[in-house]
Image (cartoon, rainbow, N blue to C red; front, side, top):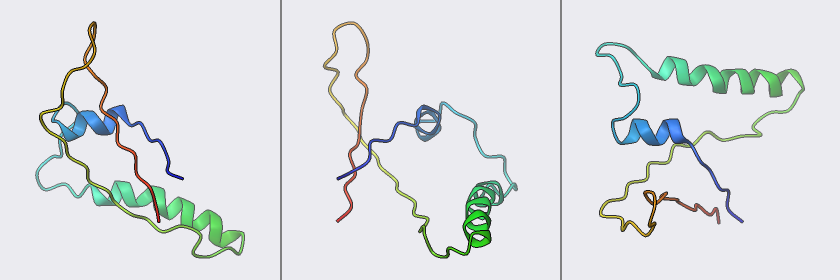
Length: 81
């Protein structure tokens, strides 16, 4: 089965509505801190390689607005085989 993910902040960043990266600043250091914490937690418990970090990039355009009162909420379903 797949997972249903909703990330409003990430969605806003994808369309230019969120915080933008500052020129010359490495954003990967901040993002890698989260994976480092998870990795450290599992390694202290003696469990190795329990997760594999991946990055997905999804894009959509010309979506139809099917709602009457508000804008439609786009959704992506990702399955792992």
